[in-house]
Image (cartoon, rainbow over all chains, first blue to last red; front, side):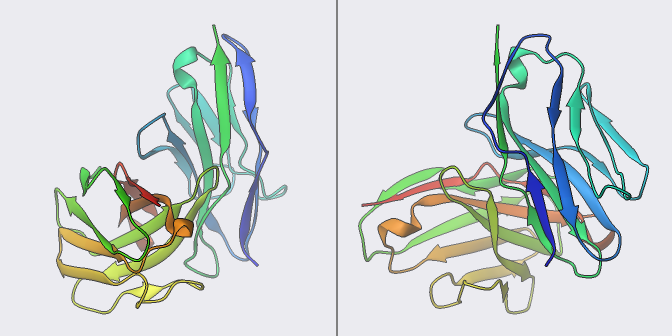
Length: 112
Length: 115
């Protein structure tokens, strides 16, 4: 069935390290792909999105490229900050069905 | 974007009781969604609520346990009925925008603890 698979956390990095959080999806058709961020004690916020193959979403220094050939939408940031500590959720929407599917979330902790 | 508020922000309830969670949006929206986020888990969609029609429930969720109201285009409620400790979770209200409502905005959540 349609699903999203994220790398398991927690991920602990030092400040200014390079971040990659993997996300792969299964879906028939062409879903839209999203990354959401949930800071401690807050609700989810949309971080970035891509709606078709080869699109790159970017925001706050984060990037993710919609790669249809590998069914992936990995989140990257070149230099993380302590303020990036949060839980990150990959999400797919659409394809052959209008499902709203979230990954399990990846907790990121950035140490000074 | 949309500004979404939820009440209460948190509550501690006794087994067997019911709690109604309110969700208010600062603009009119067609689709509203209710999610559950259990500790350390991802979000699970409970139901989709359109104004003026019955909510559509996902597999594993039923109206008797999670009745939903959608009286207008800016407001919805979710009731967690006959609660048990397994219902302890964060409940999130969300609205959809864009084509096929694919872009979602979330409320801050209601943290429910059932004793």
